[in-house]
Amino acid sequence: MSVPLVPKQRFIPFSCHDVEGICRATNFVPSADFESHRQLFANLINLEYQALLDTLKLAYAPYNPDIDTKPWQIHENEGQELSELVHQVLVSANYEQLTQHDLVQAMNDNSLFNIKLDVKFDEFSKLLVFTRGEHMVKREVKRIGRFGRKTIQFTNYERVFIFLQYQDRQWFIDNKRAMSEHIKPGAVMLKLFKDVPKADIETLFPNSKIKMRNLDKLLIGIPAIASGGIILATKLGATMLLVGALISFYLGLSDKPVELNQQNLLVLAAGLATLGGYFWKQFSAFKNKKIRFMQTLSESLYYKALDNNVGVFHYLIDSAKESECKELILAWTFMQKLQRATAQELDSAIEDYFAQSLDTVLDFDVEDALSKLCRFELVSLQSGIYSACSPRHSYQNLLARWHQSATV
Image 1 (cartoon, helix red, strand yellow):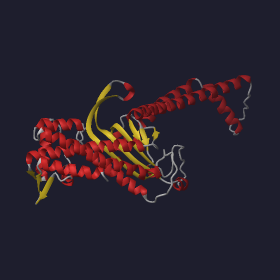
Image 2: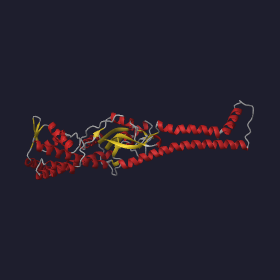
Image 3: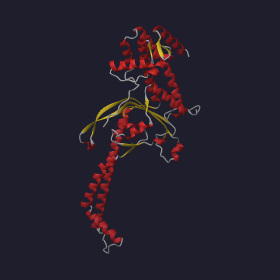
Image 4: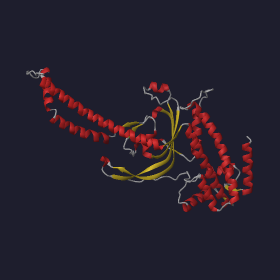
């Protein structure tokens, strides 16, 4: 089996505190200048994202299934605005959107839980799935029949975010779909999970239904057929003969009447009880298998769920602020070393440093980082070449922007 290649990630797998330490260790910037700029970077980005958080919560209010306040005004077409705002935050937090092809592939891959799920995607009027931190993982799993174990390798996501909006009530009525008591038609649900195998993304959807795999049907069905044949041959022989005689007599195929005396009735009752017990045993085996599946699924979701609905905004905003700070401080630090550079030269300098010094492969988002440097007037651009401002001038620009933002 070929091992899938994991693409380079924009996400920087170090905390903001560690990135600051990495930048200090380069000695590209004098310590005093670094500290003064670092604090202003954090203050300005925090101010911007606090305003974005307030905007997100306002846009989400009409679609929040957990809201406990009454709306004063009804706003139209905010669903589109909400999804765009969420997309903006996720991109800033270095999340990558899964395409429809990615979702279909994940559904077709063999689940690590050895279960098959059916997800009714048409019940959602809007569905967005974003991931972050894609890498390969090795894990030991049980073999078929629980004899021994084997090691498998699969793609795993550190974070998975799901944005889904249910169809309205009329859609469920028109399509004759039952609505769960947990579903609020038209509501938007936001879910955030950690440590999710790519092949098990379907387990995260709230309307997923467990189905028996063909292998499970064989593991239950073959023993059921075999044991059924044995029961028919050993324990139900007399009952089958009696039932056959009764049917033949009532259909006119035999002239010999069958006397339903006490002995025959006991034979018939014992046979029916044995047959009923057999079918109940097979049904219980199926139900127990399904219960084990549900238990495995619920245990997994219990430990993988990070946050829901409005709580997701706080988590994502915090992640976006960290990502923006990391990119900004890295780009500024390396521009102070290079002084003049193209976007490609800055990108290569940062990615090569992480690869050689920190054994970390990155796809540094240099365009976004440079746009922030330009916005904060820390670099100037001319003919495709970026030039770094001196620490003294860049600090004055940052301080002026901070005073302006704080007085608004």
